[in-house]
Image (cartoon, rainbow, N blue to C red; front, side, top):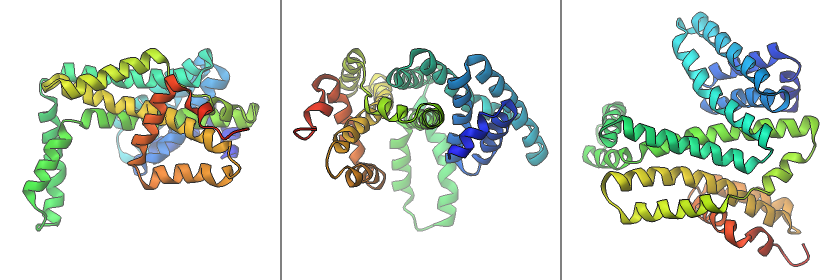
Length: 302
């Protein structure tokens, strides 16, 4: 994808075209949104906040025009572009000025936590809000498969309703950070070969944030009612943070082995195939804050 990064950096028009086009393509194919947000982040990382903001605004306008021509309306595309690009522009700006990938990730998580808390303050009954939406979503499934046990589906929907806020926020933050990572990798490939790898392998969470994370998890276990529900939803976002940190720890460890060319791909393939492994990965990320696991787990002589 190096050619795409080089095309984006040719000028404002090219960056705007890539951002707006991939934003519209992400409507039927959501993962494509990562490329769209990465284009805005790359311009911001390389050329600064003003240039990134200029591309962001122009891309929003272009997406609105394209949406009007293709879909007959501009409002949704315009709002979608703002939601997609404004957060990644802010985080890219933090990374450009602070030059610490870990801090940028932590701020993205904190933005997600703020969104979760804000939603709980806005909605009087969050679980009921999501329960109604899930009820609407499962109706087509019930119509297509009459043999599906309705009561079992509704019980599952009732459980998921309590954690949908954190789940959606976590998915949004994952997309935001993957877009930022892609942009940073593009920047590294074009202007600083090998720089992103060094940044990624050095990822470590701040000790104070780790302590706060443990306290939130403890409250989630010990409390009840709305407080416990809110803490569990925040915990889902903290899980995102420590999966990135843990993946960096394990990548660094496996990269120091003689079989690194096999072990590193095996790590990420395992996470994709067996998602439950991410719990263990996140635990490594949390413990590394105090135990410096990446150095302790290295083979002797590495």
